[in-house]
Length: 112
Image 1 (spheres, helix red, strand yellow):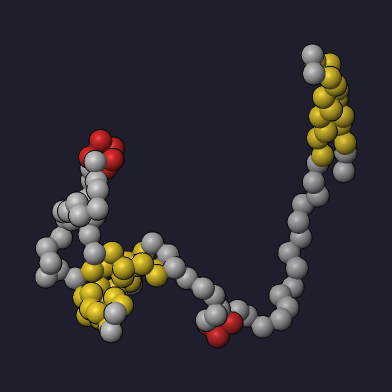
Image 2: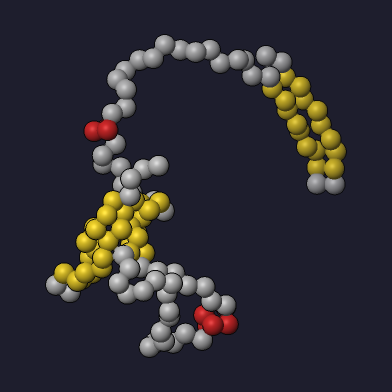
């Protein structure tokens, strides 16, 4: 490996710049067991249920008050999108369970 060091004077003081040539990486033999599905089942993911979207101007947004209605781009009978980490994986219908919302999955998207 070789090192080059150069210095420049500036109003704020000296600046040191160092350049290093890195050695080429060599392939190493594989060791251990391959990563299996069981090893990643505890990884947390973000699940989002999206019932619709809308676009509005900033002026329209700041005029919203309690009781304002926002019209979404879907009709009431259309299914909600179920997203995992931002990617649609299923569709479903919004339901209430006791005093909380839930979603009943009606279809699962087949991967491309």
